[in-house]
Structure formats: structure tokens, C-alpha cells
Length: 119
Image (cartoon, rainbow, N blue to C red; front, side, top):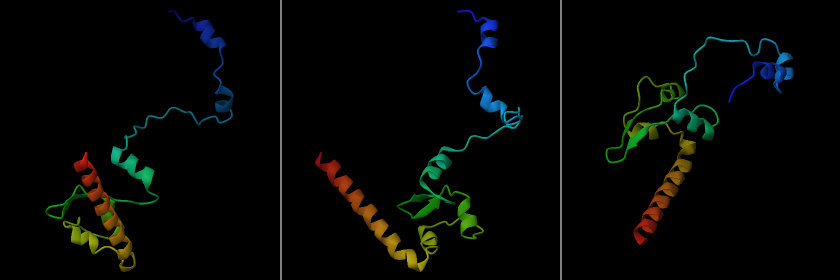
């Protein structure tokens, strides 16, 4: 298939009139943008405002793979190492909510295991 340059010049792009109303908006820039991590994209889908995450090793209750915002959000100078360090950060008024959320998670996991074992 060959392209005729005359046809390309004659056909007007459907957004050209919009772009012409905002000169400078489509100026070429030489900036390079870093792609955000998949964790950042997913977290921003489900959170409003600042957030952080970490990986919890269940057997030892140790933490790893911390998001750097945990330091800023809690005015910490080093990353928490154990789950107890995170629990200590929970406001007393929020502790009941956290306990109920944990209970729901454990019950859901127990039901998932039962369903899997029955299959």
C-alpha cells in the first residue's frame, strides 16, 4: 500500500481546531518521564491521599519492602522492623476498627481454606 502525501495534506485532523485554540499546549518538550511502579498505580486506584505499604513475614512478624512514605507519615527515622512497631502506631481510637478488620480477614481466610479443602 502506498501513501499519497497530497491526500495526507488535504485531510484535516479532527482535533486540529481544538489544538489551534490552545497554542503552545502541544509544544515539543525534551523531558523524560519515569513510568510509575505497578504498586503505585494499584495503590492510587484504591487510596485517597497518602499511603504506604510493607511486606509482613507471618511466621516471624517481621517487616520488609517498606514504602518510603511510612517514614514521613509517622515521623519515623527508620523503617519499623516488627508488626508490633506498626501496631504501636495505631491511634487508640482506631484500635477496635483494626481488630475487627483483622478478625474479618482471618474468618475470610478460614472460610477460603475450608472451601478449598471441601472441593
